[in-house]
Image (cartoon, rainbow, N blue to C red; front, side, top):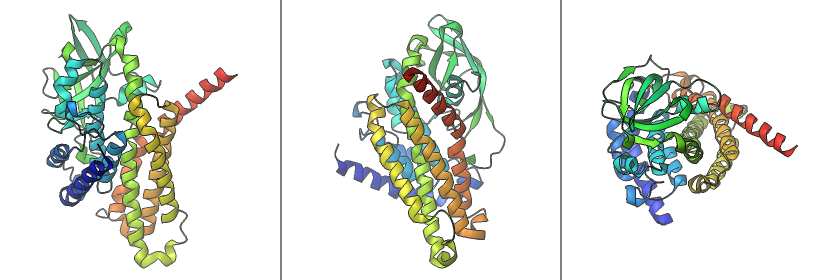
Length: 372
């Protein structure tokens, strides 16, 4: 597809965001409204399938365009940008599964937003980084698996949703699989109230001998290591769009605040031009990495560094917006107050900033040892 196609898609999504999402942003944040209708509309436009080939229901415009879509959503609502990332990342997982049956079964539905889906890979990613133990365990039963355990926080899920998660299979290794929210033995329970991201339908998943068919497995134990290496760059890089959207929204608040209080705002450390330059640099870096993540040539160290830089820039921009707005920014209804909480989420969602720094440190140490 051409640049014209990309421009047209983004324009249609920006219009949808302004007309359907922007009026809901406060309710999503303060009342925990889950924007299911918006997500279905976004999916119908191609908002989750930019990196998905046409043969699987995608629009085939690339991961970079998918990040631009997440950014466009994030300008108005960081929570919904996160949901957009969840959905498009589940499509990314399915696209790269070596098992064609599960791909054919779910990918077109997820890519087009007809089947909403959450990624519950936080625990697994932290486990593989040596941060925590894995919470789900699986045992073989013929060609199927029986899964037990619990995941405390999985977003964008429900009884009529799909979730993609992973479990340990003892000495064999791990499996990654898709499971429907209404599966027998699976209970979805509410979480304690969050300070932000309440509108993301984040639930606790409790598995009690949930049967997982071989046809719902994205990666078997013998496939898992290569599969995780293949999907991780896109998984991590895609989150950049959440931060970029929050930064752009914060820059808007700074500009609006400066209409009346520029004479005193000039004494703040982080100015609009500085933050805009920082954002431009980050976007160019992510744009150069996106095609590499798609073709499997990206260095994971470069991906992790870009994601960490994005977290830091998002925190700086949101704090600056609040300071520029002054006391008004401390009102619950003011977008600067919401964006500050959303920015903190960008820095704590897996991989969190501390997680990123740990992995970066470990990889750098390994590289130094090899060079010695």
